[in-house]
Amino acid sequence: MIKLNDNLQPSRDITVRSIGDEVMILTLKDTCLYSMNEVGKCIWGTLSVGPANVNAIIKSVSSEYDVEAGLIREDVLDFLNELLSKDIVEISNK
Image 1: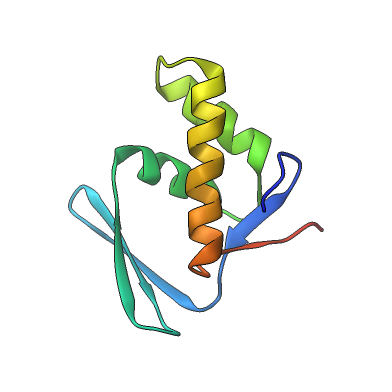
Image 2: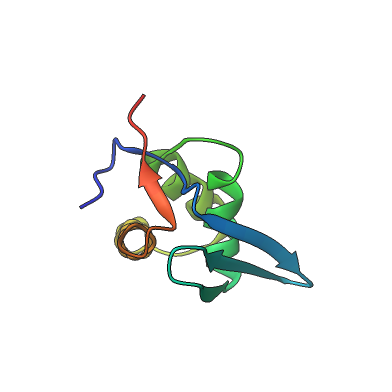
């Protein structure tokens, strides 16, 4: 379970490509292909530059979308936990 003070980074076992307006992620372990929506792209943009703090990711999404802060926090945490469960990201508390 991801916590707000965790730092996350992309897993080494994925390949990422931008195709048009989409971000596509291929997991090398099980060869599953994932496509991200607009909010997922915003989150991935923060993660892709190196380890990113969960609070910073939430702030980044909050600055892009006019949605209640508690809802953004909940949705971002759900999404990040899903990425973690699929081995797309890993916790890197360095």
